Amino acid sequence: MGKTTQTHEWSESDNILALYYYKYKTELLGVNEDQLTQMVGTTLTAFKKQASNYRRYTTVKEGLSESAHNQATLFEKYGELSRYDLFKIVKDNTSLDETITQRLLEINHPHRNLRKL
Image: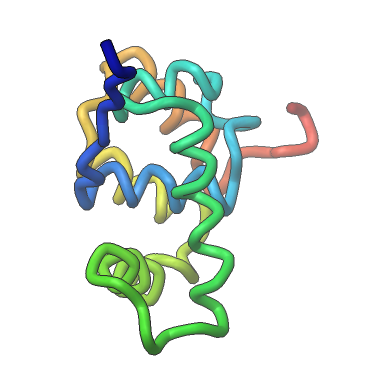
């Protein structure tokens, strides 16, 4: 019997979370990489690959596949946002647990003194 693989369909909310991860990793999220991948429903390797795709959108914009074009559009729309503003987009577009949501709001607030972390 052959090995079956499950392909994840990357939604806009998944890609927004991947963009947040690309820009800010998990250090201030209050969740770890495993929790992020569980939220998305994919593997850590696949999530990291998807997040690393955002690196190319600062220079390459033409000749992208349909899914890559969708990521490029999200990058153009959200790529320059601050961590807090991008987090608000993540919160509005994902199903974060309420406890995690509150923690993320607290640690991503723009007036928080980040030197205490």
